[in-house]
Length: 247
Length: 268
Image 1 (tube, each protein chain N blue to C red):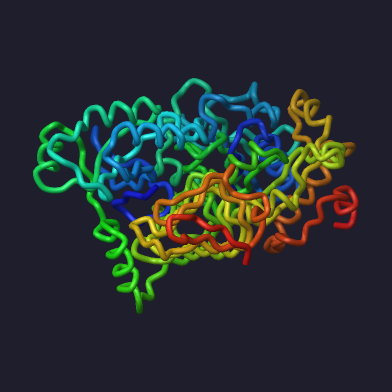
Image 2: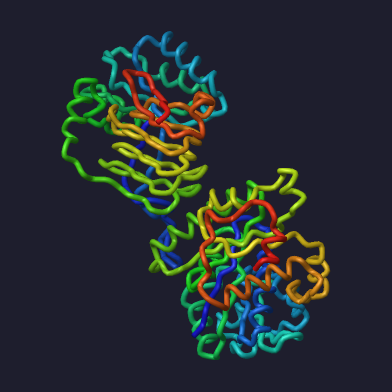
């Protein structure tokens, strides 16, 4: 799971009262979107493993828009994109764009009208992952929010840590390229390292979240062990595994 | 010096209009010249709550559109001659509300010597509710002790914050009024405790108003429940008036105990 964003503004951006906007307004929006990250190009394998994943939380995945991510696989000219999109749709997911395709393939998809979203360089491979995080050394940037993050609000800390001094509430979304700290109850969703920093962590005083994610690896409410719920925790990646550890 | 107060809620039916009418009457009974304005265009109610519904000649929209003078549209209350109502239009569309127009009416009320202006907003945080908050110094957010109401309140507090970032400096103070607090439901665990509500919403508490079966009678009499000397809700609402008209409200977040509501009311 990762966030795609054009703005780093927090909260609901409503048009100002009385604005004489025309029929169309073009606005920057931040949408949190899941991606289906392929580790194989074998359609049969993809279908089996995707079906397994969806089965665990059918309601969560129902009709969810997803980005199909090819950045971890090598695809050939003969790859059957049509069949792939069909099998994704069969799992009641809605593929809306692809990423991680390069060169001629990217041109071909674009001609076919498939939207392509950019791939952060840091997501290309594990080695570059580490380089990116090392290059963060000395970075002081952080976004500090001193008010509660409320239902319907989304806060995105671009290239920065997100520090919430009070709490986030059910229905809120905390998104950061770096770490997320919440000095109070963490409710709603929290996604750190969304541009691929697998060293990013989430820290909170009380874990009451519906979803937590580090660099695209996530756990939903049902997968969060009761032993760490309502406790002070840190959430980090160890290899491919998302760990939730008491503090 | 005019103080403008917006009365809001996330959900409908939590008692905004009851609260607005009572606070208006309470302030007026203290001798403050007070206007209550119904922002719920098309679904007006404040006229009923104040017993003015059969005496509406002109309404808020007439004034905004220049069809009536403000002085002609203000309806003086039958029981209290320092309380005035500016009724909502029942037939017009809320799009007639404009920032410029509402600002002008509030300015005129101030010039006419009104000390308190209470704006009864429609539920949620759409156009009319935003305008009600736009010129307000204080916002009283009404909530009932249930999950749905608390969630909706959290949402409008967020919207209010975003609206403010766009439009005005951060001078609006928000206070929570917990309405229909029912000791029986609290004891049985069916209702959210005040401590739990304040923990989630993280705003200052103005007052808890107990559930009271005399509120319905007050509506049918057209006399705000604050005037009812037998009502438990009236005691709390009178306390709220005292707080509003007195010193700045003391933050009570984190100090509220969940039980013993009546005891606490008596101690005040």
